[in-house]
Image (cartoon, rainbow, N blue to C red; front, top):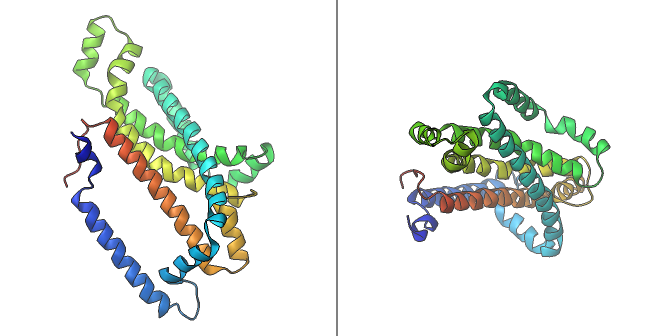
Length: 258
């Protein structure tokens, strides 16, 4: 697989772009007709004009604060998830209990444990922890599925030559797990953004969550929608960038038909 084949988007991406354009047109029409009086759903053109009015000086500090929190949460959460997957695959006796513990952490409502973390930790630590919690289970499942998909013949060959479980892990399982692992990492990127923004809702000095709360309180509808669209775009960009890295690092993995 060449670099060009990885970077060139498949045909279905053009269909997605056409669908997005159609959605924007419908949104514009509804914003200027059905929701014109309530102003609850402003048309995209008004939101874009609000972007120009607020300028880069308003958005960049908030974007930087949210990306910093989400980035650290993504790194720590993925590191914990991958390390936990390695541990469970090497020690099957604790896998059931370990997965139950991971599932409990995933089912914990972030909005409920956020205030507790804000009391226990100072600064951005509570928001980073929320972002990390949001991604651990997803990455753990992706890593485990990939580690289990290792070819049995290759594992038996390592064992025949005297290699143990750790040799199998580094020589066979790790490479085999990469496509599934990157599938989990793609989902983890937007999840980390969501966890960081929820943490900002619960208390922060800057960030997209803080800016959105302030816009809601001041009834700046266009700005609120603009901040939400920026957060969505950043999540989509993180998802796409992770997917691109995964395609570059796993050229042998099967791809969907174009």
